[in-house]
Image (tube, rainbow, N blue to C red; front, side, top):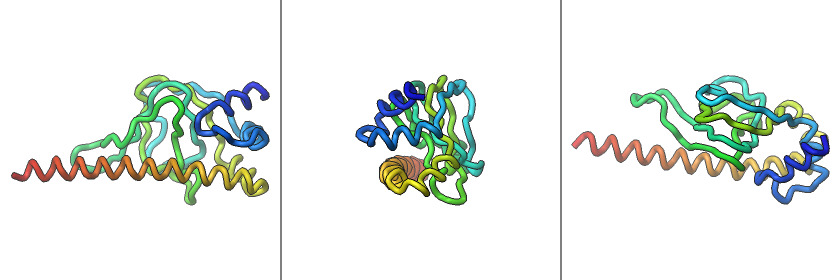
Length: 157
């Protein structure tokens, strides 16, 4: 467990987080290897976990358009996969496709939510850090929408 705490503390998402908060987070964490070439989750499914990516690449995709799946963003080492666990009803808002094998820390969402209810410092830190993740995802989505709009506008002429 101590080794996992040290490894978690080195992940960029947890940079400068108090060691005691990382230790609490560790009790909800596990090491995982996710196979490449497969979907990790789909929009609408229960968001029970989030991932701190250590190696590999994951594509965030949105579906439902005439073009099929649209890649919103590709995540790599040092990044966070998943924020939907934080906001009820805890369902994924995108699909996640492992472009290649991914090694990550998997954080159990129900465990972390329960610990955040009793440790408000932990809850605040998670909310503060995930607000930044949400902002980056919204910005990436905005850029994709602009690209799609510009492309479709150019095709009509």
